[in-house]
Amino acid sequence: MNQKCKRILKVLQSDFPITRQPFKVMAKKLDLDEKELLLKIKRLKNDGVIRRIGAVLNPRPLKIKSSLIGLRVRTDALKNVARFISKCANVSHNYLRCGDYNVWFTFSARAAGEKNKFLKALRQKKGVQDLLVLNSKKQFKIDTRFEF
Amino acid sequence: MGKGAIRKILEFLQEDLPLESSPYRSLSLRTGASEDEIVRQIKVLNKRKIIRRFGAILNHHKIGFKANCMCVWQVPKAKITRAARLARAEKFITHCYLRNTQKRWPYNFYTMVHGRNRAECEKIIKSISKFAGIKNYQMLFTLKEFKKVSPKYTV
Image (tube, rainbow over all chains, first blue to last red; front, side):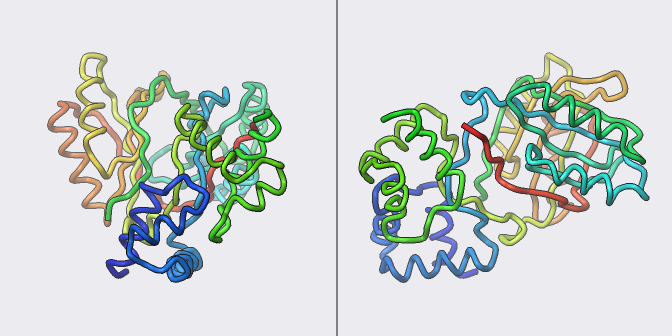
């Protein structure tokens, strides 16, 4: 990736202007033509470097609670269990990790009932040996901007 | 601005911003609010921290961060502040949380560590372990990403 793209990504990540014509303002700052900038951003998106441009909301004021769930799943059942979890719209992240507890996912919902219902169904899946529900008590840091 | 229009703005912002010179024009037509009013409202939502971050979300694999580790720590109460301070200062740690424990799971402190490779993650973790004086931890490296999407909240 060249320096020009890196600079574009840096502004897009950390300094995206909230204004009627954000790309025009960005282009001026980066000393680029707006059309050229938009073309470059489109390319970075097509290449999968940019996942999305938009807002990440803060779940707290919306009264949404999220939990981290860790599972111990038998290897032969991994595929099925993972698919069942990923299908759920309340799940945004779902990973296979090394360790005894091998499947980890996040579940967010407004009502606790939704989570309990899902976890009850999950516990009954073949190959699910144990399940940990880990609620967040305090958030010290959340900053997903990458310096590179 | 009415609640309905604000809801529409938040729904719109959780999608992908149109890559056009005036990205709020379509939203303006749908809500009846002018583009300037929409921008003003986004600034308010940002200031009130309803919006946590506004901008591009990058794919960290594609920019060279191939390794990802959720490190879980057993941190005694007296050492939490210090451990949190170290995690906050480390730019390759994106998330740091305190969570409840369970009898069979004593870890209360969670950090997401990113690196170009596993060795880079391990180096960061070892340094935190040393400076915070915490010996009991587990490094849970990502082996596979089954799902990763921006959470979309109904508002």
